[in-house]
Image (cartoon, rainbow, N blue to C red; front, side):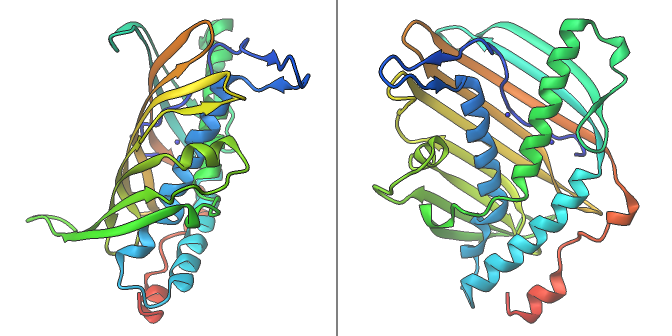
Length: 292
């Protein structure tokens, strides 16, 4: 299923053989893990592209969203041309949610998403590294580009929070609107997501987010059931902008013959940026001019 200065993101890729045929329709069923990666990408895009706007006493919602999208497009260019270190930690969990097997690996990813220095890895590890690098790059690309889910959530401003030391934040709760139609599995899952956001007041970026599945969701013509989904995100401010730092993701997928429980974290750090693209800082002056 894109990654930053010490960033942790959660994704999947395993059990690639879980590809089947629908007996009645004769259609190929995508791998369950691939679908979950798509859901994660969609989740990430939601956090960056639309949740912040209700934190303000809305001078013009359309204008606020326009500013958020404009910044996300700039950041997408920075991410695309950056390189970074990626650290992956995967836990396969037993029925009591305790790890029964773990895997850890770290590697470097160059601009464009290709892993570097693969000669030190075994053939099996190389496949894993390629998969993780691709997943992370796709997630990052999606993170800063999608903005089509604004209408799916109700947003509630909770309070403004100012720590004794540090920058002020807006606290925002979100919940899904009821009985919305959906076209994709991602949209179907998003119909059952709720959580809380911590938004930086100065630039509208998401500092932290906690997201949970409100109830189980059937997937793939009822051949799979997403029983649990829990997602935590935190970002870090760098001179170049606000970048993902930590994503912690755990899920339970019930299948006809087995139950899959996994917990995965991807940390990304040691960003190297293309200096020609370091023009993607939030346009605070434009925001002030627009009354935001």
